[in-house]
Image 1 (cartoon, one colour):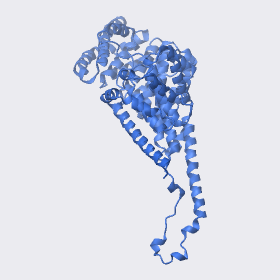
Image 2 (cartoon, helix red, strand yellow):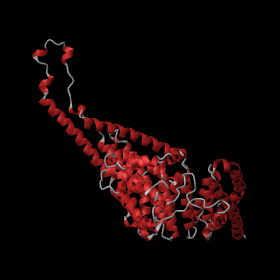
Image 3 (cartoon, one colour):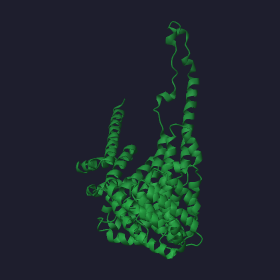
Image 4 (cartoon, helix red, strand yellow):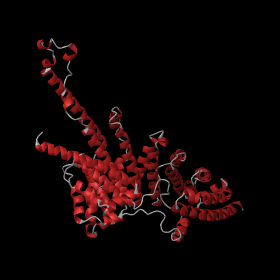
Length: 538
């Protein structure tokens, strides 16, 4: 081995060790705030940035660093102070690299996420330019057809293996005589004469280049969608928290008065700066996200299912679909109807989501998918209702979804389906000839409110009841016929007792604040229902 070869080998060994070390650091920081604090204090940033600056010679190490940086820069104002102009230049160089291999696409996406986390320290005059650069990268990532890429890369792997096998056969034929014992070997015992055939593939390192590149693209697309959701929302609530406050006017009025008592807003609202809004629409991000909500390419799924090493990619493709649905939910909640393509586009979207949902008879078994699509439907129906756009999904379709979803073990799914019924019922309450449907919705929501083990779901069901039966002649008649008043009067002390007994042990201060709001609205709604019942029975 020449001195240069030995030097290169040593350098590779050191960088492989560094790669493992950065991966360990990233994983520790991802699950420990104390680790992040130590990262801040011990000058780790300077070290990992040095590795990132070498992205052109070791992209794998740079990707590990980018993962780590995206984690440690999230909600970490202390670390942000440590980013100097040269440090930002390193990030910029990696993000704007002209190389477009799939590993580089993943690297640039991760760095884009890190730079988004650093937006608070970027000068205001540069904000629009940086946001534009970030969304340009995310747009390019989402532009790629993951299903077609899977098929192309699997075919490339097949061809590579076939070529290697043909080369082995050729060499075997050329050197075949060397493997046959000759006269000079007659004296050697038989067991010594048999020699293993040497194949060229034995001399080459094993490679899964095509698989790794495909995984890099799928990961980049998933990451891009997650970054866009972060851009749309300053704080993403956890699965078991309410995703928005009560939609009733009375509840909103009370909440405005109770913010100070609860120590501020319950959940950070969706927000979208002008720069982000402009870049999202300029790069056609809503359209690209809509395309990603489709089911994975069936041919690609079939190809992956027949190869053990490629089979895990099926789940990654499904995860991209779920992330796209969550992303869609954020955009529908944020963008103006015109920027979403107008009322006709929203109706097309509703049909698309309905087709996705009901094309799978066993949709209730796929919890991640059900939570994502019910979140998107909830946002879409709310937007459509608020703009008085005709609903495309029938009450029967929505009831089918809700009856399946309410049995889910996932609290987020149950909250979504209850909210969907509340939105649907509040629209129907303003129409004629909807008495029977309103009675069905009322009975459903009442049963959820009184029987669901989660106070969060029960509270959402009560809130939905307030919306459905707040106004309208059909709603008034339905409420009397299902004996809504007596049921709520009976449940009122039970609800109060559950909040008092279970509240602090099971729920966060924010959730308790919302539940207190529901409790107060329940008292007011019972008083309102008493006047309704008197009016209709006298």
